[in-house]
Length: 539
Ligand code: ADP
View: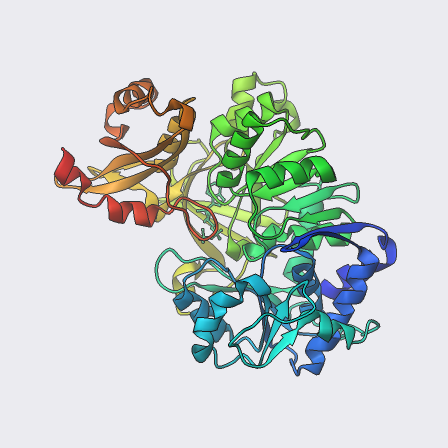
């Protein structure tokens, strides 16, 4: 067989040839603009040419600090296309972590959204490797800034070559991208994506039993382009010729609902907190969401009650997926097998709310106390993964030795597997609640609480306890309209029949909001800090 390098620029060349009329609908600070893939391809070639002129060399990192929009998409293809490495930086990290990752990645050029410049200005003294800041703006003029060596993205493109030839001799194992995990403890860990990994992962997103991204789709990644490459959707959508909506800065649930309706979005993707907020919006407003063929939801466990509401009330199919920054990220999707479609509705929902089984191309095993666990849906163990789009190290980081051993990525996620090979995430190792030597799943308790009609969000954490070592405490945000009618006792009563006694939370704390991580997950570390003396003071 022939052996042709799988490269990121070849994906763009394909779209340029076959899908030149298809569209990117991009929302930036100044509004929505439509581009064809022919426009995007020319602009991407210009960007690759401009970065070459700026002196970026093969293998050097170029950072992006941006929302989801067309310029970010151009960077996705233009940077690897000129031989550089696309380093997407999480704009919601602390200043300390942002400088750490820019320095650790040794970024040469930084592409920044104009409205995000104030986040970078205070860090400039520490950013020694950056030779040029390129500001992405719709304004003709550059914003006032204290940053040195500043360029205007559009000016650079105007002066560059729209026929620039992408680097021809890319080895498919060369780095094309890089992303840091958002670190719950210590410094963020860098993951490098190869051209080959990105191409194979994109192909997996196109499989019928996976996300089935196709030419007829209108995709809208709500997941940020700095969070595991927006789960690979921008790469796959462009390659397969789907129209794509990039929803830009300061996304609100209302804006999402409007974009879905106005642009006929067919496939969208994001973390559960986004969909909880959209659910609230759909309940209060009147929107036509009939174009949606699926919501892809991952990043943390999707509550069963939410899946039920989307599917039964709004008739929007839900695909629950699991992955990590280290795995590009797609690992499993929860799809019914053909013989499961006849199951009673509740059983089907039960299957759909698990994380599902691995997509072809990824292998897993689950290791418990005594080796590989039985596929019985009960025995728990740590999930280990390997595959062609799974990283095999952290970028120049000794934590590689803990996570990557014997050819497997040790995920730190505790799961059960049933006889179908379907995994259910019980918890992250660090979030499991260890009570009197037994484990309690915070995810199960959260799911149960979020199934209560008056609960908007719930997060359950381990709180130190003198006798039992740790006990669960639930943090609950109640729906606005239910504030006066619900109390702790009601919720306890609601939980009681569903769990054995020792699983029930020792307390329920009502909050106005649950703190979130930089990528919109419940920030359990902060809740644990807030509540660390809680059981000493209240009980
Ligand atoms: P971070 O570590 O910053 O949260 P990632 O997005 O890479 O960054 O997180 C990956 C982790 O998210 C997984 O290891 C797992 O714990 C959790 N996760 C991802 N998808 C799901 C899901 N569908 N259900 C439960 N947990 C999930």
